[in-house]
Amino acid sequence: QANGRYFAAVAGQPQEIVERSFTGAKAAIGALKSGEVALLDRVSPWDVPKLREVGGWTVRTYKVPLVHCLVPNYNKPLTGHRGFRRALEYAINREAILTYLLGGGEDPGNRVISGPFPPGSTRDDPIGYAYDPNIEPRGFDPTLSIALIEVSIGEILKQAKKQEIEVDTSPNLTLAHPADEVARAACAKIQENLKWVGLNITLKELPPGETPVMDESIDLLYAELAVWEPVVDVEPLLGMHGINGGVTPYLSLALKQLRASSDWRRVGTRLRQVHRIIYDDVAVVPLWQLYEYFVHTPALSGVGESPVTLYENVEQWKLTDDVPPEKP
Image 1: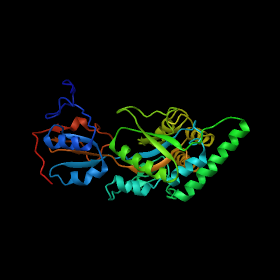
Image 2: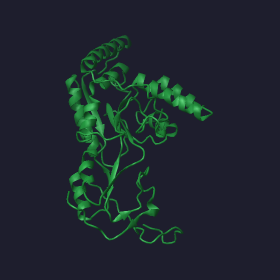
Image 3: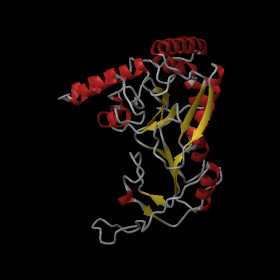
Image 4: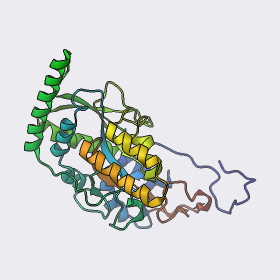
């Protein structure tokens, strides 16, 4: 609710903002058309082309994309093994899935990645300062994936025999994901890909609004990481107390060196080193960077060309009489 005593209050500013959640895009877009809502956040990328055809509606992207990846549970025998994690990366046809998510088309900036940082939309995009462009994403190679899975299971069983312990190397894994349409669609495709290499994937949808947390019931977690400022975000997301609940020794050392960096040039160098270590160790399975979209009707103005977050310019928001959209 608006604070009437706020010194920067302007005429036409909303007096109250009510957030509504929709389980599917059809209902959400219908509410936008009927005027029940003035702005729709987190639009699925495959819906963007048809929304752009509606006269008067404004479709924008946020300034910084989300980094989509699979976070492995290091406490499980299979996903805790580096060779197996590498096999997962080769088993997923990331280019094909990204094209599917974009509705069969292309959108500048949305691309397959090799690490946990956003490369940005162009090679000289300042938001990509932590991303090493010399590291190419691993390609789609299911034959190599099958071979790596067999070798990894053999190494796991051999180590378990030495330690005289029993381990579970069954090909049944649980993949948890957020309750949104992009994650659902992507995970369904990943499930199909991993079935080709002999892995049985059970999908587990997390409750809406729940912060993703790794637990013993999960082998892989589909994460949409908001790495807006890599030097600040990398440790809370991927460090000792990050979402995977652990960190490899090499990554731990690299993060320690990052904390000790005394100037911006060294920060960039250390972050690209972190990128290399995460790539070599497959600390996470990188998928793609995907820009988030929002759309609003002519009734709302002042949202901004490309905000970082939805309410960044809320002081400039103005509501006018609703204007019904033209039919595409």
